[in-house]
Structures are given as structure tokens and as C-alpha cells.
Length: 101
Image (cartoon, rainbow, N blue to C red):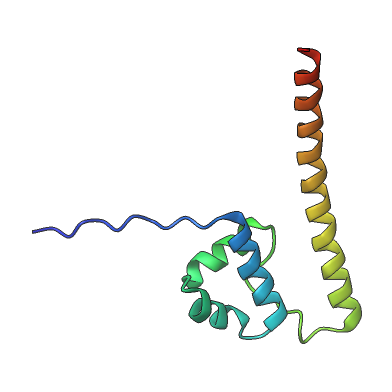
């Protein structure tokens, strides 16, 4: 008898961000620690890192303070841009709904 296929687990965006931030804080070995702590495969985490636009290998602990600051600023800019895009969509929806009144 054939085994039933296991359904792929989906992770909410907030949980992905939490795991990726944990890895950044931990630095070297962070991904391995995240695999153990959050019960997520290393391949899944590497995939998230690639989709985030970065390399699957991220090291912030060993770099200079300036490098870490630049990486943090780049991350914040990316998050700001995404949030502004979402805000723009909300404003358009608000105007559209308000026009119906």
C-alpha cells in the first residue's frame, strides 16, 4: 500500500519574519538554532531568505558595526516601502468606499 502524501505546512508571514529575525540576531549558527527551536527545515528557511531578496547565508555578528547598521537600514527601508505600498492600497479603497456615500 502506498503512503499518503504529507501536506506541506504553510507559515504565516509574521512567523517567517520572527524566524528570520531570530537568525539575524543569532548570527553564525543561527539557522541551525532556528531549525531546532521552530521545527522548520533548513531548506524552508533558505527559501525564505532567497525570496526576501538576500543570500541564503546571512551573517551580521562577525561584520563591523557599520556593516550591521547598513544591513539594518536596508532591511528597514525594504519594510517601509512594503508598508507604504500597503497604505496606498488602503487609501484607494477608503476613497472608493467614501465615494459610495
